[in-house]
Length: 506
Ligand code: NAD
Image (cartoon, rainbow, N blue to C red; front, side, top):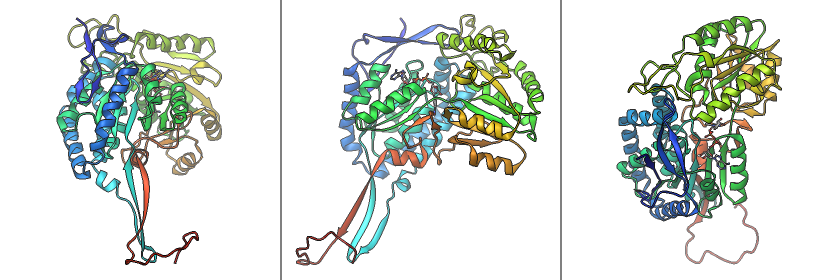
């Protein structure tokens, strides 16, 4: 019997009959189908939102101290059981175990930030704003909120949102990716163990049907989405049309600019780490290396030499550095760019199809039918080629040669995406100029994947984010609460009197 993965609603696994529609979940390293995941229809989504609405009544009134203590307990459990969660991620996503631990650590940072909610929710107070009048501000939760996440970070991306949402007094319906759904159910059980009341955190599995119902449902007050740009745009347009707050983070094409004075070994290491880590399936992966003349040949040689040494194999094998792609269909799509890039005139320096793959996983299963593509390098790439224009989301790194800093900057700023970028240089003045002039939301200086720490906020510009609030950090607190300002006075009895004029200061 194939394992069944199903929804988590009001503190329980869904006990209804298997859904009419289900999706296959694979072990990407072997290609085997390991589970079937239920796809929610309107009725299941409505049940989850109903549970969240019911739980909101009491959770939003629960003291900040009590909410914080649940957050601390969740943090402890997450930390203690991170290895188990990492193994679940590896088995469905394919990334290597150490990388799965890395995404949990970055999610845990947000949980720790949310543990500071008593401080984060403090409002302002002005005594004697007018004579005998005090004014103060408070922030209150929104209600049931939806989080819709992509396949590439099944634990971290949901944790960009739900710790702050829950700490602030909201209740959550999470719709994780159908490709690697088990991490969400694991997190739901951790919440229960941490003492979170039933219904505060719910999971519905599925696809577009579930997403669209969440976008339309009148009781869902906000939507936090992360995924590809076309879907992010759809989520933003639909969610806002239904009157919700929406933050929708989309795709990326991240450029790394290497200036002639850069430390080329550092830059080559960074390009390989950021280009091929998680098989390039990271929204902050470097997919374009912009080499300012004359460093191109030298840099390509150093990167090529490093790529040859990369160990590609199942994520559960201790010595693997890069795992498979998430599905066979995605692997085929990514691989098709090797042909289209060559046809467009780019130079295929390293062909990932020829890279050796470990023959079996840690338990002796053959990897012959796994979803593999080794690290790939294109040189002499130009805008207009599909390898440059499209978000490939795989282990394919493109090198674009430019004659100057200005030409590199112009290229980056002309790109429709603006998620992350990096500059590699030993010149502080050049780096400072770049951070000022580049039109991208997150900038690294000699740092290839500049994902902000939890007390800043994460978000790109242009087609990489729809909405005006970034994820987690101060923006997260802002997004998951709404402000209220109270103007109060306590006059002595019979100090009223009629005055139809507009209130002014005195
Ligand atoms: P995706 O857009 O295919 O799916 C994301 C979520 O939307 C999933 O839960 C999926 O079930 C749902 N979905 C898919 N198609 C839908 C549709 N037509 N209507 C409604 N919902 C739909 O993305 P993915 O393949 O899971 O993830 C990879 C993408 O996510 C890449 O483009 C990557 O850059 C992006 N991403 C962005 C960030 C960021 O912070 N900007 C972070 C991680 C991933």
